[in-house]
Image (cartoon, rainbow, N blue to C red):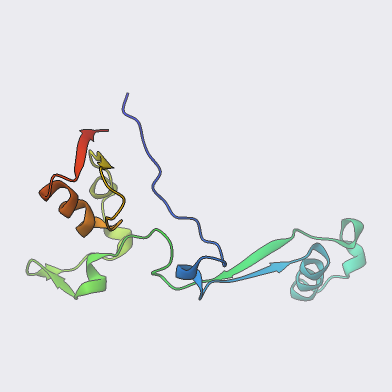
Length: 128
């Protein structure tokens, strides 16, 4: 069976990339007031005068690990309407991979750097 490696990046407000991330926690008490107002009931009608706590997250679409849909770049692709993200087949997102083992520490940690490692023989590769 193939191994699956999760390469996702966590969304945390303290990361530089996520400086525009806003995370607002809503307490049980505040959630109860919101629920009661919306459904025209009294907070005291709710069990223990409480409701589910929750978080409200505001973020840009380019934060953390993400996939840009073809439509992001241009409205057409290969002469046809470009796909929106919900139209991208999942199998486009799964592929064989390689492990890069840099031989020196003075390399860039991005895709261009990875190509440079292999081209300059500064890294070994092995299938995952």
